[in-house]
Image (tube, rainbow, N blue to C red):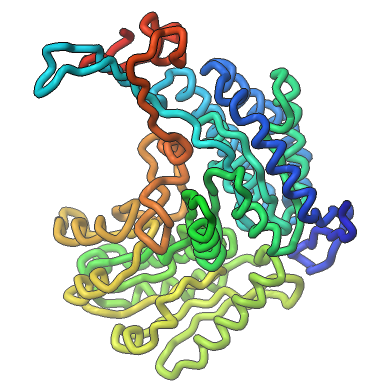
Length: 504
């Protein structure tokens, strides 16, 4: 039994409120993992339509609780209700998108090579391959996205779509939101006549819970969105196991912006205003926030736009005490550097509300002080005045990023920059801002280390492939094959048979 409990904290005033949530101990955590594992085979055996129906049912249950979810999430995160509503809609669309994909069976990659005694160089046996669920997936909820990357966010939705049972570690910054969302999932499982143990959840603030789950023998893969510190910890824990498992960690990014001299001459103020909005959106708590802006030409008008926007900035708190303390400490230290210009917003001193701060420095000072090239979670960004000729060196020395953005003037073509940026980032943006991650088939939300632990995406339909593994069945009769590989193709999915794709 749990002996301790905790409350949610309202970031606006920094005060605890509401229900007491039990801090779950080792036995309870291990029970949640074991219960999820007990459903592994039965859940994997569901038909495509049954699994798709579950995803749609979860989306419906979440929609039914929308008003309650908005109320509690607003109190627990300090995020505006409009933002929360948008995130709930995104979560619902994501579930529906995976349901549509699952019905087609395309994710199974069903491939059949019929027996051929004349195949060269040697006779070929009957071989049939498809993707199967990887097993129990542990999902760790993110602090900054109470829905999109939390209990039934992208990791959970894609794992369920793949046929994997889930154990979720809810983020302690929004325990009430997490519990209500979990109840929506449980209601959907019950409505579909499925075991509630397909989806289990644990709550608590103790770091030990992360270790217990990551090291549990029944867990076959981990989905995580959050800090590099925890992401790297999970990778290390996975490697320490007797049987290592994959960790699909999205760990944040600086999302550099490169602006050409011609683009600055053409629309400096417009870019300054839009990138300021992007950097401070959600109080700068987006993994796609532009953390570095490199100005390759005249900077006066761009910086003037930043000053103007700072005078109009609204107040929004950071999500919890730890985040706000780290932000304030970091901003204070960076502000002490001689030669660095700062633009600081005026905000009330209450709760976890912090001062938006823009740092402006030249390229030589930036190179001499690597702390400016670290990710700073909160409403801040670093603007570097340089020359376009410095771009190649900057890109060559950059770590892996989720995104990289290039601003060019009308008619300006710079293929060498596009090629260089594609080597360091998972998504490239032209003449835009990196915040805003569309949930679609063409989306890629991932990038080279350390932005992600693998080359996969955590957003979009391709996210499902993280939790699938290919298996070949050689010489099996239909009676022993999964339906997707049986000769009569009972689920009528598209397959590749002897190199020919179709409903065969």
